[in-house]
Structures are given as structure tokens and as C-alpha cells.
Amino acid sequence: MAAHKIGFISLGCPKALVDSEQILTRLRAEGYDISDSYQNADMVVVNTCGFIDEA
Image (cartoon, rainbow, N blue to C red; front, top):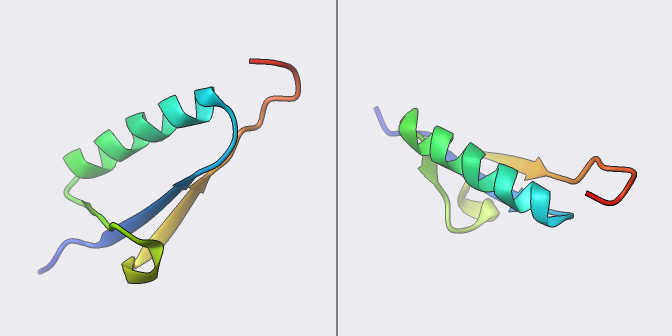
């Protein structure tokens, strides 16, 4: 069975970028393939910044 392909979009602040790298690392460890484009993905994750004040 082929691994699911995940598209990943990171929006927002630098903290969101750090979180995105951690999420991608975990997804790879769990056996997911990271798609080079969201058009070719089975699922797309959008990670945004939720801070109201400066992080």
C-alpha cells in the first residue's frame, strides 16, 4: 500500500515555520510522504499563526 501524500502550507510568523518543521518531521516518521505540491497531495495541511501579540 502506498503512503499517503501530504501537502503542507505554512503561513504566518517564524514560530509557525518552526512548528511546521516539527510537524513535517513527525509526519515523515509516521510514514507519510510529503508532496512537492499541494495539487498532487492526498491531503493538505495549512499551518497558520495564532498569536495575537508579538511572538
